[in-house]
Image (tube, rainbow, N blue to C red; front, side, top):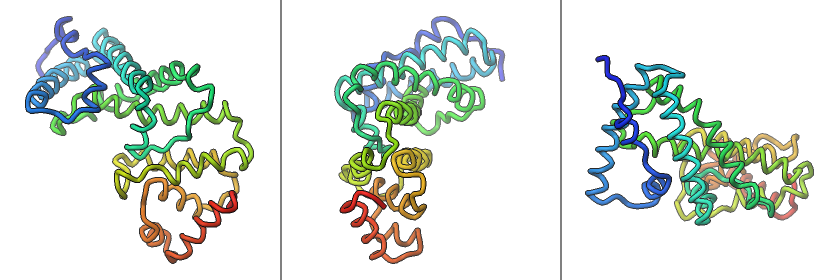
Length: 256
């Protein structure tokens, strides 16, 4: 590696606004946008190289961490203000319970905590350790925003449990049904990121009674991810009819 240092101009050049990050998530790119994205990726590659050379705790490290925090908070906040945050999570097969009535008052705090909690791990794994791969065609900032969605799901789950006080099955049934019956318009299949499987399972674990049968938990997780009953049956090694019966009893009786 050559001994390249990042100038202030270099760092300023890769600080897209939160709105830009939001647009990159939402819009189908035009040829011009593709060209601009490739330019951003080239600049991101330089910044990552500079931060790797400077090391953790350096000025470059702190400035990039601050930029990521601002972009992540701004993007999730904009998604929330436009009522797109929870639909975006479900499109990525990250099912979350519907927000409680207190959510508008707490959204800013939960978003900030989730993004702040995502930054250190992202900086270590994706920047310092070279996990971010420019060849995949995703800018560092967009890659980070995707990571914040999973971080948000974890932080929101903690908030939801504390806010709702979900200790009895009767209080949780509607939210579990919401996860299982969420919009399947994106089609069946596994989640884009394997981590979402763990997120789904953790959310349902905290909504369901602690003694819930493991097979039922898998059935509910897979149903929330829009796997067919045949696919679920093959995974568990049981009949399709058994899967159907478990789901029917679950919906009709409100308990396992």
